[in-house]
Length: 209
Length: 198
Image 1: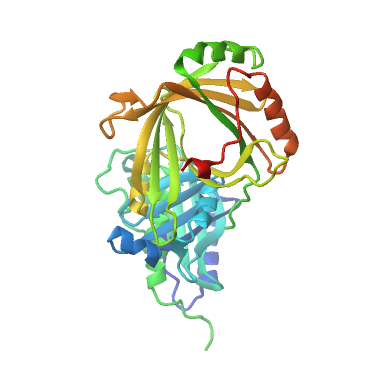
Image 2 (image 1 turned 180 degrees about the vertical axis):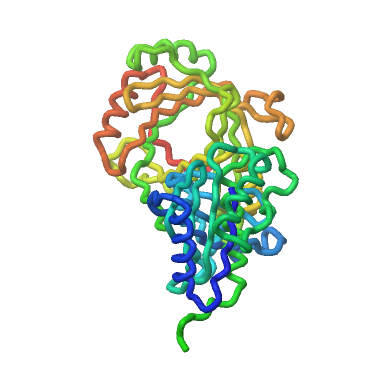
């Protein structure tokens, strides 16, 4: 339900901060329940297609989430989010003359899933190529599908292990206070997180003095 | 993430029958087909094009059911058809079928596709094992987007016999040809080269 970025602790590396966070979760009583991954590939409209459309090139994000292994998510920033089956990747291969993958654009987050009572927490290391660029934290309150009904509870739970780094309500909730929360909302949050991390400078390697 | 390989392709035989032969054809099909009532269907199909500097635009077809609420939406991309194999009695086409959420038309527009044309298809679906036999009539939509206001495009029904199977299996096309023999002389299903129709 909520996806946010955890800042890297001062003087620590990405991996060390992830270990601190996961240790806090384990001390709370959360149990490890396998791993997760979310990846994102960026495509831009090929120049050959632009001229015929008379519009500026757009960026299209094609994402996958291990929670939904048979699905593929395609979205535009501030635009619609399409949920399709994995044959969408085959379609993108066929469309390579019209949409080209941006160079070195693949970004992904991988990490461990934790279950704490009705909460599902996923702490992941965000990487672009070989370099670790940040930390993602996703928290889901499983019994509830209307985000506004459980946001206060989520906030309280987040504070118990994120402390002062607890984020505000995600922009994706917007005016949709009573709307049913779905996988597309999660993917929009990951897309925004990845874009934010892409713009940040690379995390300096800590611990080398 | 690597794209999954496409391993199944539709084999196709097609022909048409005049309206007055429809009842005879349906009666003939009931014999060799599975012993269940044929399904009827009413589909609204939209065809989208994406133009670029390539010689031919990219075409996507998006059929959706009008009479079955809750049916999944899907988008279909038809690729090159294989005509050169003389041992194969059916048209084999590269086809990618993608199940999507309901907002795919908005998404395709965002990608740069525009709708080229749309039509309504109404007919019957028969099955014989893995073979599907579809007999349907095409209706033109007189006012774009209004599927209630349609007009039959011709005085005939299109019949298609199709099997989805791995490519290169001549025995599949042989089985299709043997089935098609049973429908002669009412209808003579053939391997039609789509390029020759243009």
